[in-house]
Image (cartoon, rainbow over all chains, first blue to last red):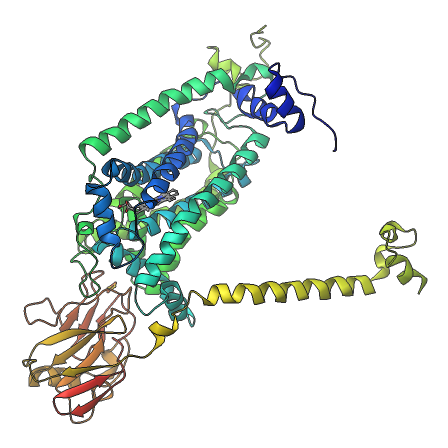
Length: 421
Length: 196
Ligand code: HEM
Ligand code: FES
């Protein structure tokens, strides 16, 4: 594979570079003419939105790091210094803070889109698993980022979450001491969390790259969940989906701006504006909203190790989901029973979120246990069995058919898909 | 022997050499590959260890500092919190009723069975000294002040996930699995202890 690339670009400079390093040809192929199913709905915006959001987090983060001091004696004050003294510091920090919440909203919608339309099914298993890896990395990054301002929630959130590892038999305590670099969360912990908080987003960039590589081998799924059968089923990515994604990106920035300018602390806990105090636990420790469902699962199990295992298990089941769901039909549109159970899953995840935000008492304990039970039943029991029992609706013959108004046709119809020049 | 020579031919063509069937079994080259691979692994481990161990507590953190606590100002029925090695230590002056409650419990009722006598110094049953970290996920339980919530067993109550401890610091209600830990300490005289 040695030899110059035959570039088709007219511009002599681009042509010169492309001949020696065909990145322009690659971009043209992967993002220009890339054949994409023509029936995407707006849920297919969320991958692009996640990418934009990642860039936003890295850009704002790099500038925050120019004024932030990762030392437990001054970390809290340095964040207040960013907020009050640094030019536009408040904007950069609020964009980073609310950007993290937006990131999770976008990625959760992206993920549930995948669940609804069966995007995890063969041949996209690896693509899906890489997505779960990205989710895990995001969670680690956001958790460590939340520790950096060194408020009460930072400190006690870090204490509770790192202590999860003490549930591991035998080596648990040594692991926690190792994570802390001391006998409690302290300055060494803050230092390493800052180092890793800076590093992990770039690891995410790497895994996102692999995610996209895998996507461009299998091609995108679509709302009908059926394969692309002919070129008539597709349109080039540019300009059709670059434009459609741009619409979503505008909405994304409007929502972000609304948060940053009108409700910058909407998702924030007031306790985190109190400096960390290792001698006093706040009356109630609540994690960031995007961790609430998992926190609820942790607390719904009355056994320490059991709770931790179930909490990580909630993500582990996503990892093996492609093999748990036995139905060959992807889109929930053609799975009448799965479609209802999908919404039941959504309800139970929201219920878990509410449970995570309340003291584990009375009715909340019951709701938490029921929702936890359904979450695991859904993936581990129902999906494997349902694929065998459910009778799917007839699938359309091709993507073009319903898009062009034909609707699902009985098999053996003689009508030909409309021909396009 | 001829076969072995073919395998070690530097051109590498030996691999596709006619006569090298799948049934040949282990060769000297396989052995060398394994030894080289294992050596590289040990080397990588040796390089990784200093990096991993650098994350463990550093020498200044490890230097076992000790603190002395004057018990005289602590009124009966209440306790104080002091910092030792970055950890909160509870020192509580128990009332006669609290001591009796702690001693009268049947071991069979306990989640993590231990007698009260094993948790205090002989002759100093009115003083209980504990590491004030909930054994569930590390919050600091409430209960040193008489006005704090102390839970059903009158000891400590953890606000994070609702664990409760008795007046001996033993867990009586989960999710915490273990009793509050005891720090190493000794009485210097009747009103002074040294922790560490
Ligand atoms: C995956 C991308 C990222 C996520 C999800 C994320 C998340 C977070 C979160 C949740 C906070 C706490 C905000 C607060 O409550 O104050 C934070 C703080 C911070 N992050 Fe990030 N971050 C990301 C990328 C980065 C990058 C790439 C950098 C640096 C190059 C960075 C630097 C900082 C700094 C310095 C702070 C402390 C200042 C502050 O608390 O506002 N972040 N991050
Ligand atoms: S940390 Fe005390 S009950 Fe969870």
